[in-house]
Length: 560
Image 1 (cartoon, helix red, strand yellow):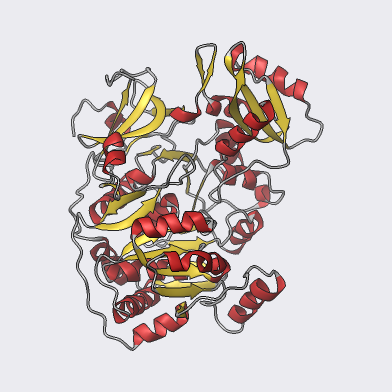
Image 2 (cartoon, rainbow, N blue to C red):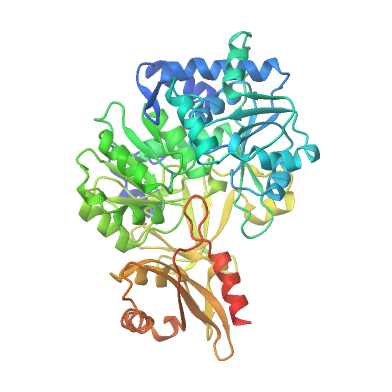
């Protein structure tokens, strides 16, 4: 890699400039080694149930044999639609061993969104949590799905705990609406059938697509990013290299997995990267249940946690959080959305662990930049490009901008997707000569650290001046009476657009005048919000990203 890449100067001495993306032929080959090496270590922990790498190895084989026994062929598409349950990692590595293409699906999708994704991807089999089966029933006849495997929350737990959990979910909390689906099997039944059948190992190639990871679809039709063996292997090796020696002294690092595994962040960082290091993922079935995360910190020493800004903010505001023991916590990784400086500073103060922000997207297999660990990171930045990755800032005319200038972020590296499935035009719009146009606005500092300014589409234009919601939200996060805030554009006769903020109070005494005055102290005049609306809670995705689109629609409706 060229010495001109100034960010290489920020790498600790043990971090290489490049990784070998061809070190393994496939993800299956990569993790077969992990299952053997860490055979007696815990791979996952779920509601107190421990599953070792050795146990998981056998169960993955059983699920792979089941898929082959029902006639599934190499390259067939299987959808996963479930929260963080033990069935997910077992099915994931089982499906990959059988040569399937995995299609991750958000369980909160509406029937319309499910129908689009299943038909777009060509899904013929699905593993679905029973809680969401009633929605599948509504669209099943319009799909090519022939095989349905049902999963329940308590199914993989020992007796009688598993039966009790399922009874509570179904009868007490009534979280499983009635449904009727033909030709279904439970996950346990599928494993039992697979155990009786012979499994024939299936080899996939480095450039074979093994994951169709759909973009959120919040700004249009959801598109399937085609991620290959080589893409995902590269990202695991890049993350592992950048991690340096921060976790090397911990044989089996225990990491909180609160983000859903079907999301690209947790899929790559938790399900792949930490497993490659022999880690134990503590599965949180509902990431919004902050109390359950608190309880896991109480049960065992936690070495790492991944999450988004809203998750860390919610933990910090839980009354028991600052009483926990953080002596084992070595790594806190944030991404998905911008980590606010006020949140990162408070996290460090309470836990004595840096909240290291990184950056990536579905199309980059998750990770593109990481803040150097071991106290070398820089608050307010997304860190530096990971090994074998090049980033540049481009202006509207397609010219590369120097350090300090703001423009669109473009990325090049072996983790960049193959393209969007069945969408050559959309692929051509974002991929040119190996460079991925992200749609994010950012800048590079003179020493190689990068900053995200905002999403291109979220920029607010006030009297010709660019105003970025992230900056306003970062300022509002510093106010001691603010719990959460979001900024959006509203039409304005004089300035074209103006800033409106939606705020959730931490202290009920907070007033609009107090907020505006605070903003005037910390922001240039044209950035100061014109309209303030207080809310009980902000709309969020199930991952915890604030849905600015919903707030924009609300603001527009109220303006009109």
